[in-house]
Image (cartoon, rainbow, N blue to C red):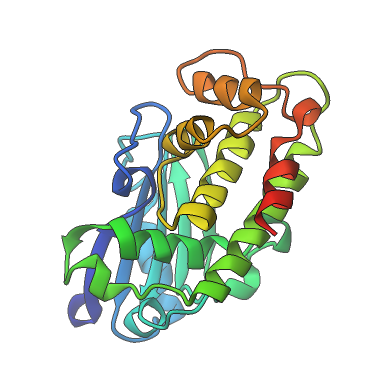
Length: 236
């Protein structure tokens, strides 16, 4: 589809961090192109890769396309050419430019995702991920991690004392951000939760229940325990 513009394809997210769980995890893919894409090419890519045209074998596909220059920029700017989310258990969404992404959804994801790709990206085609994606400078990465903790904290603040959909993601997302900040390495959400438990972080029950929820157990009462708020305070 991209022809000579194609520069690489990489598995990201849970696939990169050895945490893919059939039925729960998404397939996260980053594509690289040599130059910015025209809107016509973007729409053709979406038409060919959306679930109705190319069925996704997982919960959903989360596809992001970057130029080589953006991938190697070492900045936290979103900078993507297009983003496609679609799948059997995922609502279709296309975003053709960063300015079109709703602010409430956060823009910190892309810099963090590229940092994960630099560390652990799995090559489907192209040069090694550590060469294709530059690491962010420490201060810029720290700022994005704090932004992500703000976002997770806002998410958990919506919950009351009842288990709620997304509460385990909020707690473990905060765990992963905190582990990267404290220990300098990206882990899967579950492994990050276990790392913090081993280091004596509180509240133990909330982290343990968040991990157990990944196997179908009841979700934690994140609003009650407020782990994300604690994680944000300890990261500052």
